[in-house]
Length: 181
Image 1 (spheres, one colour):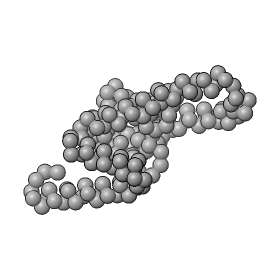
Image 2 (cartoon, helix red, strand yellow):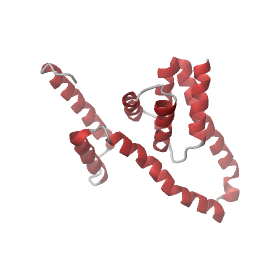
Image 3 (cartoon, one colour):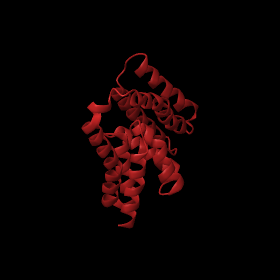
Image 4 (cartoon, one colour):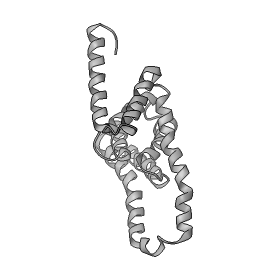
């Protein structure tokens, strides 16, 4: 039960102090579960993050499920999810109750405009961290996928499927050649 409460408290702090959605939470989650708590190592975190990104649902929620499950099975997954969801739920509830009275307030508008660059930086940080271990070939594939999505309008869903099939084909090829994957 202690692990579950620690997971809840850890993800509650992440949920309270992160603005900008799931991608903005990734550096904080990594810092807590890999760096500070040492629950998992960096390579395993990237694997869990990849799984969380390809699973349906919000990234932060999926990451909380996978990390929580890894640490304390079903109870850990439950409490990690509760920790990441409760702050957002309470904040959105409060905003919904009082939004009409302060949405045109110049101070509130200025605060949100001032937060935008920080949110962009929080979203870009995990991209740079994840790209470090890719190597040139995979980095070029990632750049091609970005270009196909952004410039050519390809659906990311199809690119994910192509990437998954390419990974399976590569693993099958390596296995047939007797090389490690």
